[in-house]
Image 1: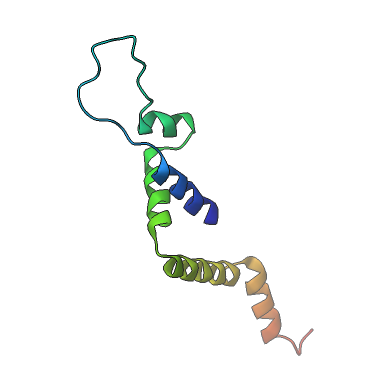
Image 2 (image 1 turned 30 degrees about the vertical axis):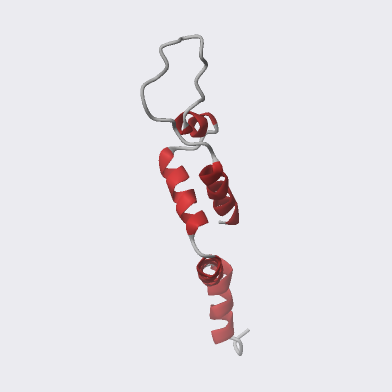
Length: 93
């Protein structure tokens, strides 16, 4: 999750598309668009958007989300279920 947040921060800093009529002089090299840059990096537009939303979260809210995710992940792990069953049957073993 922290990597996605950092990725979103980097994406937010990238130069955005320049709008308007393209130059008539074909010898002028244009800057790659934001879409071209993320495509070249192997990032689809949905991921780029999600990462930027994560990066825009206030720090406290982000850390709270991380904490809740960690607790839920540990609680849903197979080992946690086995330990719970063993705790219930501690006198039997």
